[in-house]
Image 1 (cartoon, rainbow, N blue to C red):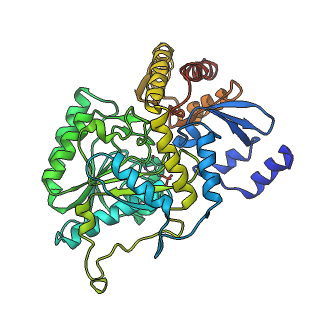
Image 2 (image 1 turned 30 degrees about the vertical axis):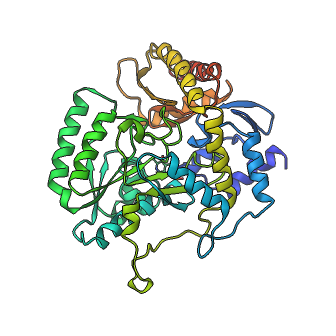
Length: 439
Ligand SMILES: *Cc1c(COP(=O)(O)O)cnc(C)c1O
């Protein structure tokens, strides 16, 4: 199909996520035809740096020989069977590998296929395990303000991004929202911590679990807190009998400088959610890891009905599991964390320069995750109708990059293997786009 026909049919038949379609259909869509390493290539052959890792998923770049080979080899065996009543080698090997790599004693893996379901699984697991241990009053969850845990209704209930979640409020269950700072350290964080500890004391005995995005609240616009802030809250929650659910769907697998963000927090959660980068950005795959102690709460005779009543049809898909194994192997073999470190360093240097632009009010960074806040030169916000960050993101495209806005924030989150030069170029492109749109 030629690009014109594709655009026409997209406008006629597709409905894009988180998108005002009235705006979408007013311009020609960028149609990605293929990719090469950290570049996406459109139907006209134009190349773009994949500045947000195809929505925070891509780890090793696109079309990676080791991952392609793992996928093809699995295709030559079986593409899909089921985890209900059956099992298969790739899912088994991956679960064993995750048990080795993950922090603490997370020895059990329950598979699903996206971040929202990984969180739903964790919520139900935490709740049911508390119930089956006789903790009947523990029916609620604590969360961090501006949390994002996915778009299904349970995940939305523990989320609190006003813009995404307000309309659905009548459909949701109540959660206890603990204040979260915008950036690490400082009085804002101290205040949030003391209020959070107070709320935990008040509600601790009715809480099943505390659910949080460790270190970086991604969808909130890369809001960040210190490891010590989270450690203090989580430690107190645990003392009060509250289970800890680390949602590492975004931050996991190397995004914040360690394989898992919880390694920096220095505390092992009871449950841990993985998705986005788990299969290297190739295929949908999610995992909810838990401790043996949680798992034990579900054991009993079949007729006692203590089992976990949950499962998705494509759970633990063999193709995705095979690629995930290859991805974990490559992270180690190619020292991808060291590559991410070098990339983060190069981006940091370029971001220091960017921060001198009068329209850049604040920059937050941890590992390869970056939030660039835009404002008017006097520090005040732009009118929402000005769509400034959106226009900046669009202005990076003719310069050869794809980035995404979140409110007035430009988000960068490149593949971990992007070279330091390419990372610096990505930041430079954003700077040019900001100057063009705001200047
Ligand atoms: C993206 C995300 C989710 C949801 O994942 P989906 O695969 O989009 O359902 C959950 N939690 C966090 C922290 C995320 O960033």
